[in-house]
Amino acid sequence: MKPKNPINAILNALASQQRQGETSLIVRIEPDLIQDAMNALRDYRKLFAPIIPRVTNTQPIYGAYEEMRQADVAQHTISLFVECQTIEESREARDRLPIRHSSEWRSLNNGI
Image (cartoon, rainbow, N blue to C red):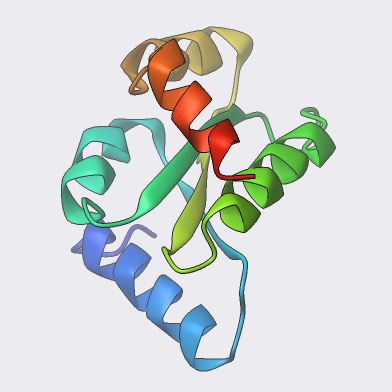
């Protein structure tokens, strides 16, 4: 069953993780929520990763997330796993993801 307001559910999950003292903020969302999540989480640094549960190796994603998080520990960084059921749905989700320009990556890496 989907929550009536999925963005509020995402924000509540993040708030709960923060209250519990979690430093890694990780949420799973459906592909059609990418743009809504971008709008709702405007003040956070975000790493979106399309995954297929029980198929995708998430270790490299966690590694990239930790690099982003440690580059600027003062700013909250969120990893959003976009749960897809098929390779095609994963491709479609990837096409919806915001693309980071090389200059943004360079400035991120300069902070390390």
